[in-house]
Image (tube, rainbow, N blue to C red; front, side, top):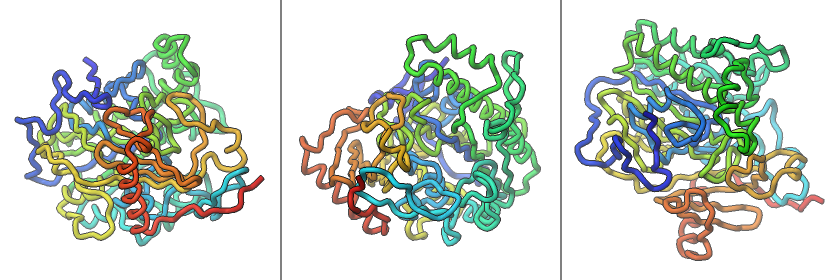
Length: 492
């Protein structure tokens, strides 16, 4: 039976599902150190999962992961864009603190000429600085066998698009095993002929990336392992040689659906990712290591505006409305985490660094400058919440260059169009979220508990609340030395 999370709509008590904080549930952390497997999807929306209520997508393996473990209904990516989010996840520091807020490029520079804008964005950050301690380095010091598989995107493109740098790639950042392949993703054949059409129903393209991880899991490890599978799915280009999948979703998605053809292809793409997750989890079971492994699944940012339905959330990848930063956030550790539990506490993927450090026996509390907090109090299901703010900082324009002026000015819900994202920072504290726009010194305030779609700006209704959160946001940005957009003469 499909389990649908209704936490987003303010309903947390689901049939057959416990809510974190309910009496009679517990998940002690005593005992041996777990293996840790972090699965990072690319551009997967919060709403893409069947267990999160998507009306058409079939994600049985991710639904099972949610059913068998602990999920966070308000889990966030640190940024609305790839490199910045990944850098934050690996260091436990926000993009503002790192000075890594955009996507890495092939060479140094600034944003291309954008007509009629009044701010200049900071220069590109090309590489995650070697002075920043990563999860890989921390877990290696803790005695773990470390491994990275797949997309890195934290160094300037080396020799090819997304190519790993010999000085700043995962091999130099604490991952003793580091293997890359595009696997079955269209990146593997972009510019060349697509693989032959797969005619047999139920047959998916074989994925060498998943296969590499499964072989690693099968090794006779003498110490706990820490492995990250960084998928290329479901990033564009969206394409599949499995015609039966397109037929499947052509039958499921009604003719009147907005952007139907794109959504059919995308649904097949999400289905394919879920299949690979199933292969991976089955490999963990077959290796006899599922019971001693913490599996974490999340995404680096929200869904692509031209493919993903981020509803009921506003916005998409590239902006700081909920659709750009709210992501799946699932944890499974059999016997240690309460199965089928939904936690409503707002958390961010930069919390993973201190969480993994604590589980590895190397509490990160003494490290200075971390934005993340260990999630272990929530694992124990004590009902204890965090008294803190979450912060985001995006001092850039998107799209870049002259395309910006051609894009839709407003950012709505499910408009399936690339919108104009302007330099913005945001803060969430409790149920309130504030967005601050640098061009016109303007803020928007939302109560996400009653307005998850960010439709009703409350900054005029509650000016004192807005002023308090704005002060908190700017104090934080000043404290961490955030790079700010600078005012320039408006270009004609």
